[in-house]
Image 1: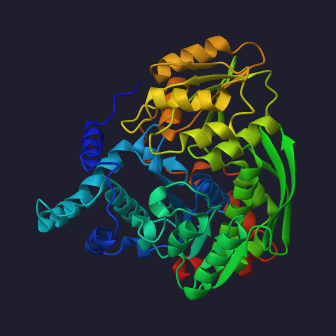
Image 2: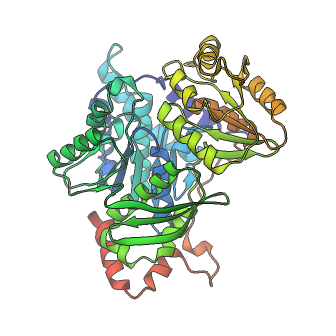
Image 3: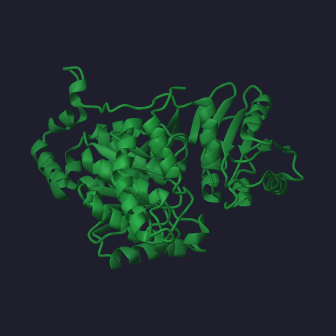
Length: 488
């Protein structure tokens, strides 16, 4: 493992001191912090993504589409799996340790001023609010052509909700955080808070009552249009392919076929359609001048760590960050469809606040052996609770259930249990998946400031933007792109 930058370590420690799990409803602190920074989040077009599951995947796919089109995209996601640097990327690269420390120090100096004004008993700037402000500032400083930001939780009161929100994406909504409401319809009201006047709204598959709530919110906010998956956007065809799936997608009247998406599951096909819808809404008429290969190359380059990610062979080890029943159901369906294991060993470690029983129930029929353990988080469910939930799920079946004191022991046991043709699935929490990824794919790159530029290419290799400009509608594309980047 490389030695990390001491300034980076100091910045991370300072952030952690603000309490990663501390949440205070309201936009007062982040608004004041953004004011002190000069409202950097308004300096660039932005795509704002919320929903119950799939947010991070959509952000990464839109970022890949922007890269294929020659646009510099900054992405902000949460939480991270292995390094906090994962949360901020520019042109597909994580922020470097050095730049992270610099951005932190610049923004934290102003956050400290607000904390002093609030006094020792007041509400100080939170961990997530400071990280969000760092993303705002870094993207404006770069500068990016577009910012793509994932909501931390909910929508209305989330610290990311100060962005322009030229495009609002709302993926499928289900139950997850109790703080947001007790029904999907109540949760939809909170997540619809990201819709801004004049914005383009892209909506995933929803229950009828949820869709009605979202459409009403879009009308009340005076949004420009609503693009719905299953209506204006559609997955026309989906076939299993080596390493992923082959798709035909429709956005409006345009159909793009032969898209090789290197991700598994029908839910990722839906996410790809939403990402394409968001990209089309952002670029507007300039999309008409883009060749289909731009879309193919973009979605074909999408990567989503920790989402049905194969990280080891012999035995095959799969990581999936499913941490609610909706996500676990999608993972189970995708594994049954895309993998042909003889038996599947499940290693599960969840957080105490999650629906442990519901998560395990969705995985009930795809596993042949279960190892429960603690998630490597202070908020982990106890081993006793994990074991009780597993016994309620598989008790009376032929599926053995075992308990391991820690994740490392659980992984050792799972690898011993998995024979030839078997697989190991690690799920239940992003903390669990992140720690497992440290074992199989440790972080080795502290980062640098190298960003992909056209000059880095061989003279005879055209950039995606040059290929676009060679189309017959070059002037149409360029005019529309200029308008977009000046001020959509």
